[in-house]
Length: 321
Image (cartoon, rainbow, N blue to C red; front, side):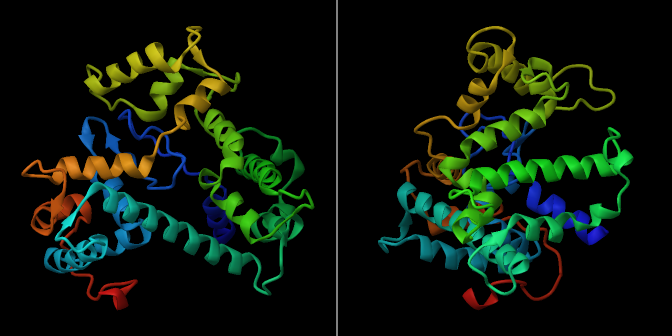
């Protein structure tokens, strides 16, 4: 049961990061599940995930600072493709795209093998459904329709997966080849999946299920006041202004599907480029718009982080270092 629960949640959850700064928004590119800014504080885990890829970020978090810096130095040399001794914004952007692509490719490969051990050309919906939701066959039909029950939650997840499967199924044969399966797992990375990403985002935030997002739902999705809080942080006030001034374009007090699309998938916006600019801004001590290895290592906690723990040997990708 627990295994099925993990599988259902892991496969069903679309990336919908909730950064509050204007440049990152909810992202169509999968850089990180971490929010870029939490409350008023910059969340460096977002930068770690974007710079390293989520897989390596977890490894670096378990390294002592000395080993973390050593590995970061090797990465800097890889990023500096023209070998001029500096990382420019274009090189950094290309690296971020590379780590993003690597994460997605490896994640798709892992799930493809899990759900298709015989390496057939396609995975049928019924096969996927049995693998992920087969445990639901033992659940009571009455419980499946009872709001807030575990069975009801799983039924909703399966319905959501079914819809996403349909969007990913380009030839509509109810089976996904590897390319289509990649779109199913990572809809944020495939343009034809944008409508379902928008729908899922809308459904996630629309708590009263009226088909639109109110100001209260918008704020509540990214900020939950703690006991004793007397006043909202300034960034929350700024987000209220963003909602009323820019998100709610027809000024009716709500965001509809089209307004949500403009919010999470703005045209001509390059998230990798925005993250590269952000990292350069944070680490560029001499303001020459490029980073030396010394500048990167000086800000190693921004790029890779470290909990200074003694977990022992590095985990994955030890052969790269």
